[in-house]
Image (cartoon, rainbow, N blue to C red):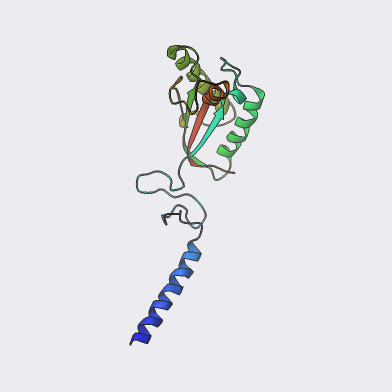
Length: 172
């Protein structure tokens, strides 16, 4: 009886290992299912995609001159790539949030306006390149939520940014 039980346990482990090998790529590190058999992200119970939102931080130095909200050529090139991924066959983007930020120089009131204009400039460019305006939201936060110190030029440069959060699945 003990030998039969051991054989059943071993057979069960082999079957379990084999089943897990078939599911490879379908589960995340915690074992939660995040992709279907076609490799598509699936929705989890709270309605968000199992694969999570994709977040991209766009450096304002690449996209805008200091104290400006007009996109630079290098910024347009990066946004062209992003727009192509969003419009790619198989992409299922439900929403795009654009959050503009500034460094700590200037008043909060002025920086709120500048950060909103920068987020709106990114939105306008994405729409101009075929992304639906109905899925885009923008907000300017001014000098709130710095990601680096405002005491150095390098830190201030990092704080001048537009964060893009894409909720859904995009191409590569």
